[in-house]
Length: 146
Image: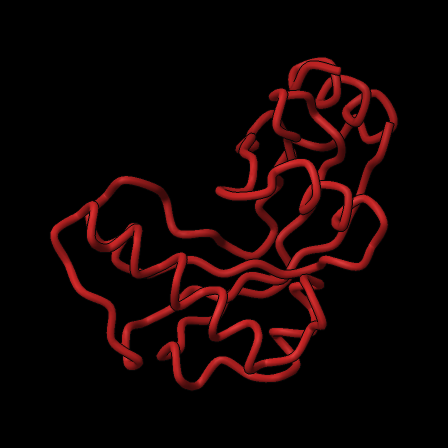
């Protein structure tokens, strides 16, 4: 299903909802992570604050609606942001790592995986990773599945 079709279907059952949303896929393993969201296992994500500082993307806000896309750019569900916090990488909590729903859901695994991912992204921007870098931790809930 296309993102516009999914949004219109959601608006049909929620006519008071506006028409503002973002549509995106996860940066790696888009299909797997989208499936985790649909199943309810993944209800959080994280990104580096520097991406927002540079104006490349808008900082997520509570009550934002996002259409999650799979690797083929197909819309799989709509989520609503319920919490946003900015914390240093080394202060991301075990609870947040668990809510991200990936792998064994442990904080140590989250740190290893995200340190590697963030380091590669930063190198492309000419920056280097450090453990005190601010991370945007976002929690969401699925509000609509086709």
